[in-house]
Amino acid sequence: MPSPNTTVTKPDPEPAVPNGHTELECHEKPRLPRARPQRPNYRHIHRFPLPLEVHPLPPLIPHNPLSIISVVLSYLTYLISPPHHAVYPAYFDSATSSVHVTDEKAIRALWEMGFFGRGSLSRSEPSWLEREKKRRGLLGDNTSEEATGKRRVERREFKLERARKEREAIAERLKQEATARQGTTPSPDAAHLPSIDAVANGSASPTEKFTVNKAKKSQVATSNQPVASGMEDGTTVKADGIGEKAENGTKTVRFSPVVEEKEFVADSEVSARLHDPEMHIHEEGEEEQLRNEEHLQLSNEEAFFLTYGLGVLQVFDEQKSVMSTASLLSLFRRHSYFPPKEFSTSLEPDDPFMLSYVVYHHYRSLGWVVRSGVKFGTDYLLYNRGPVFSHAEFALIVLPSYGNPYWSETESRRQYVSRKQARSWWWLHCVNRVQAQVKKSLVLCYVDIPPPQSGHDDIGDHLRRYKVRDFAIKRWVPNRSRD
Image 1: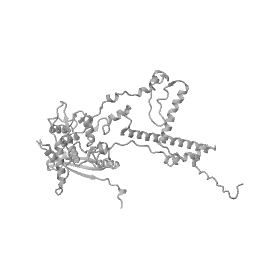
Image 2: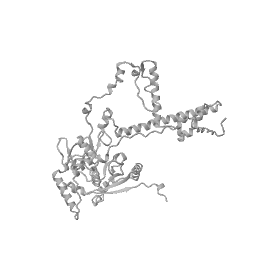
Image 3: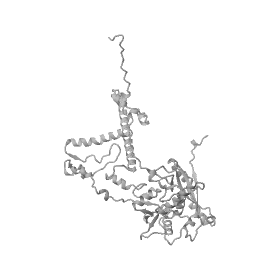
Image 4: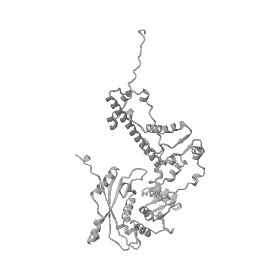
């Protein structure tokens, strides 16, 4: 019996744990965030907006004599070491109606300085060589495309595993309800199963929710179970059940009956070669033998802008001779039709290449990064700095405008104009809805078509005859526009 001066402390009652789970499960250690790989310094890589090397000139302040000295020093520096004007080679491919760049230095320069072109074996940035080195085990870092694919696979596995767990829970609940209706005693695990409505609506308890890691563990356990049972019987493995469909809905390989009858011994020479670690070791000179097979594919508008607008590209024809700017313009205009027009036919002022290039040159001269918008159903996408920094802000659709009196003089011309300008409100609504879903502003870019002109040797005078007018369209949502 304790004395009067002794204080007795009662232990705190253990907190009630719902659903019969132990305390260790409720007080799990917090997971540490996964360390993301360090991103490249895109600000330094893409510090030049165009593939041009310029010499900056300091400002001249008349009332400050030191500014005159700085201007003189700048001119002396320009005379001593003028900026290098690089010209990159390319060739025109008539099969794809596009221009290809094969030199690795030219590929990196055109992509890093202005985001011109796209990789022939990649989605956007020419990164086939890095991905191939990673596949062969020559690089330790993951590329951006591999990281995106890995995340998509994890999400798909998580959804499949969650659906499988939900089906099992619903089947077990139905089984328990059928047992209860028959008057038998339900199992003790039935009290912890969620209801069918809770599983269907996704309102189950937090302890019953699944994560990607749990989905991975359960999937690995189910995949390893038939393999272990097959190896316990002996040293032979048979290819039975390989062609069956997995529980998670993925498709497996189905062998023919002849292949399924074949057996191999686990300790044979073939299986030993499969598990030999030396099979995955690459030779030291393999990296040197790996050649970059990817080209930078430029659109005709990009190639003509680099040739005529900047003068940093030389396009060679099939005879390996440099094409002039006038012949290149005529070639691109003829290849804007399908099939390409012959040289004997006359070209119209509203051919597809002239419409698209006028718009491309207009926005490139304003400082925008112009990329193809075919994946969003538009002609162009406008980026403020580039695709590696942010998403495109605007989506452009190029439309011809025949405001010149020449196009309304005769009935045949009026019919031609009406056929070229035929657009429906349904088409505009669909395109605008797509851009609203991807959070881009739709811009209708009208190009005023001039009348035909027989001789136009000067390309600058010919381009000045076109005018560009753009209109931004915003989707009207009634719920957001109420008073």
